[in-house]
Image (cartoon, rainbow, N blue to C red; front, side):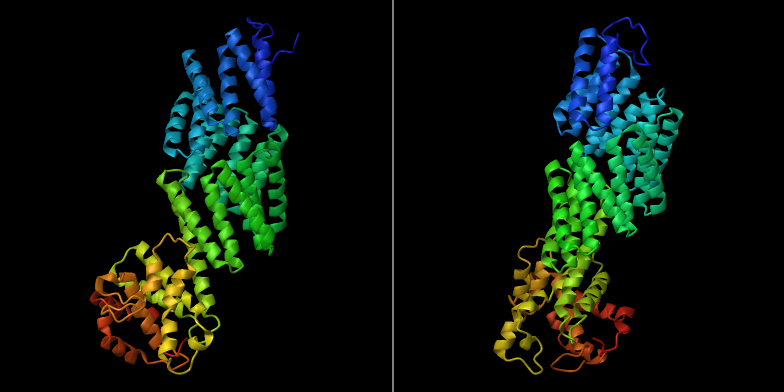
Amino acid sequence: MQDPLPAVPAKPPNPELRPAGDLLRVGRAHDRAGRLDDAVAAYEKAVQIGEKSGERAVLAEAQRRLGVVHHRRNNAAMALELCTRSYDGALAMGDLILAGEALNSLGGFEFESGQMAEAQTIFRRALDLAFSSEELRGRIEQNLGILATLHGDYEAAVNHYKRSLDAFSEAMDERGCALAYHNLGLAALHQADYEVAEDHFTRSATIASRFGDVHLQGLCLLNHAEVCHARQQYGDALRRAESALDIFEQLGARMDKSGAYKVIGMVFRDTGRPVLAEQRLQASVDLAIETGWVLGQAEASRELARLHQMVGRNQDALVLLNSAHRLFNGIEARVELVDVSRKKNSLEETFLAVVREWGLSIESSDEYTFGHCERVATYAVSVAESLGLDEMQKTTLRLGAYLHDVGKVRVPHEILNKPGRLTDDEFDLMKLHTVYGVELLTGVEFPWDLKPLIRWHHEKLDGTGYPDRLRGEEIPIGAQIICIVDVFDALTTTRSYRPAMTREASLAELERCRHWWRPDVFQAFMASVGAPGWQERSPATV
């Protein structure tokens, strides 16, 4: 005779119960160790025996666990069918705990597919059924905490995780405690409380190792690696991320591999190994695409863009940043992994840094115009504020101002820095910088409408501008704003062909030419020109 399970009577009424229970236990052991093929075989046999013996509790639990394994293997339809059958069977026999377990798993499926509202509803239903099971209540609180984390509500997340830890401790479920410590570590990591995060990940990993939970060990290693990277402990970060990668490779956990490659790439990038960094970050992007992990793709694209920025590949960086921005917008539109506003703000800061750096690099060889784009951007935003433009319009203006002269890289150096007046032919060539700028950005699609600002920032209301001699309302207001502040900065700074004009003389010249700009733009300029950022500049400052 086989040894009975501790939770099963020595002489069960149905002799088929014992092997089914044994198989369920064996399947769980394989599952936790990452031997998924063996786990599937054991669970499937337990289902077969449970169906034949009529032991519905074993059957429902085996169906649920088999469904979870199928979900991890990206077989969503089979996972949904098995867990739904588990829930229906548990309800039919009045076992609310098993029904709650099935609901918790179904909520997890909705969560991982990006259906956050549906997931939260299901988790709440499951929590209502978990009143007599501390262990189940602990797992549901965990899931609600994860949802709160993704919404950026870290206070609520920590409260859920602490309730989860209390429930697992009450149930003497050390593995559940390990999960709670892991997720408390994640909450601390998001809040940049690295010492607390490190302590939680270490506790979680210790318990996971004792119980043989290889996947959780891998997650602890990976997230601990992120802590080390944030603290610039690059050697430790690389060692932990590579160990996590080995675990995820053995488990076939491709989405988690994407996360490991991202951290490894970030370490290589930040320690001066750009070739290796690009390989690893691209692998992270590719795996995220393959597994449908939209958030992972967006974040890996952002990190790869930062690498391109560091090595001066600004156009490549902007292409990737736009891709990441589009992905984050898609996530937000689907109410998916939503703490998107914070992530998008971080992304847009990177966007601005790349554009600003590119604009400054264009001017770096010219002592006369260095800093021009920075000043034009600052002035343009000041005018936009006077006009009451919204945040999107101000961001568009700032970015457009940084890039408004990008086309000058194609204008010969001797024309850009000619000390005297340009000939008509030379001036015609100089005017082409507005066209060249748009051509340089042909392969870059921005979340903001920058190209009209670049092409038309020398157009004038009366049709005397260039390159297209637009008139009146044909000219975007942003281009008009950049035009007037561009002229002001040109007048008040020393150039190769003339000294700087005084502020008063510059304003008088602008008044003489006010017919070039819309009345509201001119008035907003004059209203904002008295702001501190304008007044503090010496006319000779370049």
